Image 1 (cartoon, protein in one colour):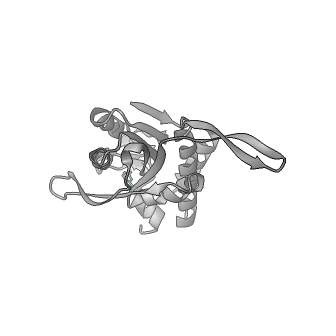
Image 2 (cartoon, rainbow, N blue to C red; image 1 turned 135 degrees about the horizontal axis):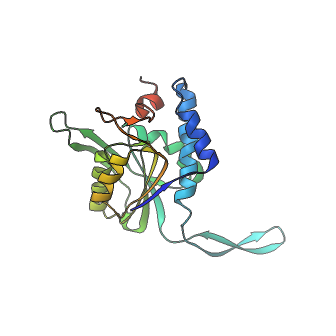
Image 3 (cartoon, protein in one colour; image 1 turned 30 degrees about the vertical axis):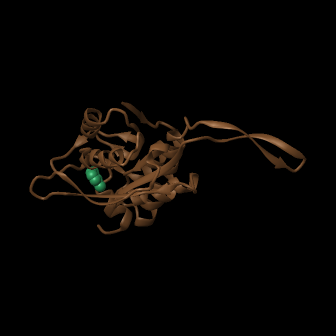
Length: 208
Ligand code: URA
């Protein structure tokens, strides 16, 4: 499985700011979006381009444009929505499919409750957005849904990932590519990433 921990100085700097407990909702949201844009830049570095031509001020100019497979964004409710604005800054025409998954209170198994994906998934690269890759359960269920709907090329963008989640993902879907600003130490007993960010959804939506 391809796992890229993005070491770019801007990413590391902004992640350091994002980790501060005193961040306001506004700061946390802004930093999450900025980091999402920087992760998008890394995750799209291998997009194919082709020759094209535009009419410039002094005549035709040969240019490059993105070819073939288009991108669909797949934020996982709710926290994934916090990464969407940053990704859309770079790919404003991307179509967006949304996935909602809850945890069964007894079995703790992920249970999909909402799925609204775009068509033509076989011809698109799906960028899954979720700030936290913790146990991997939600992500694996999301990938199961996407593959059942025809997706074959998948990348995941995370602000922070846990080693436990990466291992679970590798066992279930080794064909996905992962882009994350950090691989943290571990999960605590409640499934939170340490040192992590706390509850990313609460911090993005201000519901803490
Ligand atoms: N989800 C979060 O929001 N935070 C974690 O640490 C793990 C899962």
